[in-house]
Length: 415
Length: 124
Image 1: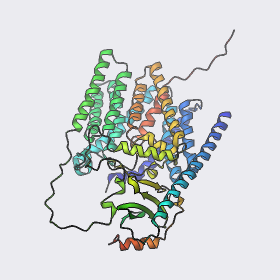
Image 2 (image 1 turned 90 degrees about the horizontal axis):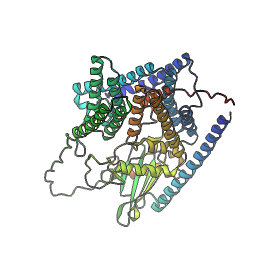
Image 3 (image 1 turned 45 degrees about the horizontal axis):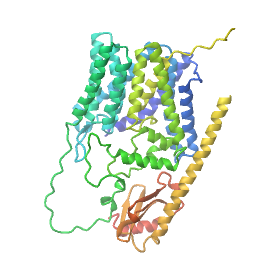
């Protein structure tokens, strides 16, 4: 039985529990939401649009259910940020908790690989090499979480005060990065590099160490790419000579022209390449075409998987594998504008925290956010509450806003 | 209060736009499905040459002008035609309401579809 099937029902209950506990903590801390905060207002606006979209959704109940789940993610992040406002030590503990969560998943995945290698690896075929997937449903799942969490490991290395702490953070970094490299997930490699580079540039290191770190991050990226190129796809075995008789042609068109291969791509056998898009370019073009049919408001929140149909020869996913296109399908230009504005508002607020407080936690939060928005270019997950990386991203993002100093009330001008 | 009123007004406009876009899109797709359905004529005469069977729908494929995959309609269990493919002229034109089958007003007899599928050997 799949481990994922065992764990799936728990995630919604645990997500709901997290939202309730976070909100209760914020209430206990008597944290009053500042509605004038752009990030908070935009988050509420996005949720309002998500729920309103049930009115035009192709599946209103699905939209409401996914809306509730995504609301739990945003409420958790916002409530934690409110409860931690101006308390960098608490933010640091929560960031350590996010890193620990990712490490538990990565460590269990490694354990699964040791115990049941067949279940932790997507086997090689003539198109793709063998790829490590651990507990994930496919090679891109675990690596998404690792890419988001890897900047936190570098931050934890900088924050550690004891040799044991530094060794632990370094081991965490190796585990997370090793998981990404073994998965061969190129989007995760790029996202992790962006996040690590952000930590290297934003933390208060000495100039020489900072340059060395940036160089090290780029070298690590090159090593990851090189490692991912070691496994090779299986070679197509030459077929034994067939007897000279004509087999009756099947009337089942799926064996000759499958609907999933209807559009795009070369009819030649596909092979995964370092600089290829794995069929994404065709799928993205198709998703844009579908979005153009309902450009302003989309098909309804949470319906991305229902609406997107994989008709593309070299593409293999039920989602367009781009979060921005996914939002465009779900909520149209209006929703995409809200998501981009929310991400920008969170980023600007957290960057202000770095500038004004020099707090390393703020740099870590911005790094996670930048890794997340980069990852969103090649994975559909930003608004999918059930996705492995969604909660970590939004929690870190909102925690970053909690470190920004509050604007002082304007005093009356006196002549 | 002004901000709340503005947000509510914005949401109302969005709901109106969303519903209008949805109706317009579905009407357009159904019109194109109906055109393919009309081009096929009677489902069993002449018989389709190929088929597909999925969990929630099945497709019948008709040849035209030497193209064995020229026209295709996909029908759900209630007889609603939810998708069509027109491959005449070298380019595939797809019309679909697969995301909301209830939107389709183009119907065929599901019993006849099943009989045709049986004759094509879909269940053997």
